[in-house]
Image (cartoon, rainbow, N blue to C red):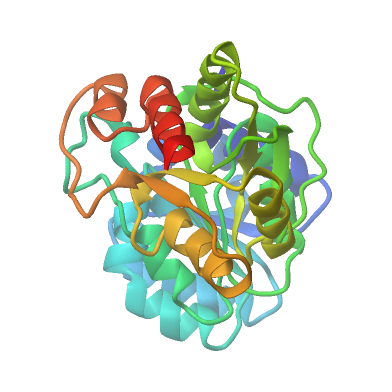
Length: 306
């Protein structure tokens, strides 16, 4: 078990021994875990204080000099408070800044609806030329961080808060490609981030009912793996998306756009159904919002009955 934000910080330290880049934070280094990088490379860490918009403006300026920047804060402050700077100073001039945003979704638990950002993927996905990544475990996070560093252009990297089990021993991650965790022929469960392991548990429940569910981690939400979505839609005839985000504009929206264009398929979307978050225990919130393993399995069974 390891928190995705810890995997992010550890990977930054490892990559800094081979690549040149800066890391910035907005008074949340202990929470985003960039304090790990600060201790290892203090000359390459910049603390901006509680000034997210300024941080992304400064990050854009550094990037214009040819130096990539990882700029971290909570997703509510990155996608929300600093949206204008991200759009106009980072994405529009195609600057190489990685917006590393932690604490997205309801599964942050006790922070409550004001901090449980459920619209950040939608906001970032709508920005032209913005790449959007959301890894599910330690191995995928490490691969996503390196891919973001080597990518040419802006990246929104959504990182979870809680500890999650390791799902992949090794993963050959590529921007624009999904990773198959489990193959199946009856229903394709496409998920992102911290809910992927819940989808994997749901597939185990379904197997007990004689249902073979494919489980896919779609860590690259934009660009999305249209070929894989089409393949599993045609193979299974049923697609279920699961995300800790509003289904409008999130993974569910992205997958439905692909299916509408290439192969209309019966599908269902699990996540926030146009609701704000609320304070509570993460597991209780997962049940309330229908993204716990049993709810995912039940939704898959209902989808198969349609």
